[in-house]
Image 1 (cartoon, rainbow, N blue to C red):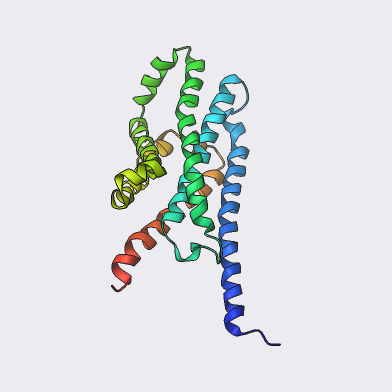
Image 2: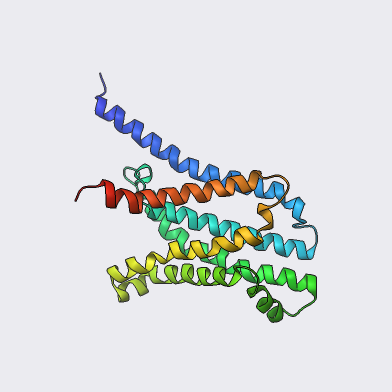
Length: 227
């Protein structure tokens, strides 16, 4: 019995979508492995202070990769539409949105604790000193925006503010991520080690996510889709 061409084409499209989703996880795993390979250049996990800094940067890495994944889902990229029979990207978006803030919230106190151990200062004094570093205050504002976007997405908050307001507030994710990039470039020791494999992969992830969001959320709907 011959299989209709439409069924073959549909199965092929489904397989390509599954490979695209698998590629996202593979990309994240490669970036994580490259970061681990770079960690010995920075003395991460070598002593108590290095252990605290290592976990602090790992929290930032996991949280930022999670936000990038969220932005890809929010971009409504045509290659990332939901799989037949299961809204996987949407489910991932909702569930990860509750976990990612925990990683983002863990990053600042762990980094401050590291420098407090190194310099012998109290935690609050060190925290205020870190806030004066280049782009750190902007990053703190970005984190507040990201957490606000998550809180507004909670069912109890979303029911009160209504869908239009929730949709606009949800776009704070873009602004929040943009505000955090400056301190990554200025202070991120992981991006300036002698071997640039991790840095190259990280910039590729940022560019890939940004281009998808720019094309599918702005340029294509505004300029290339007829009403």
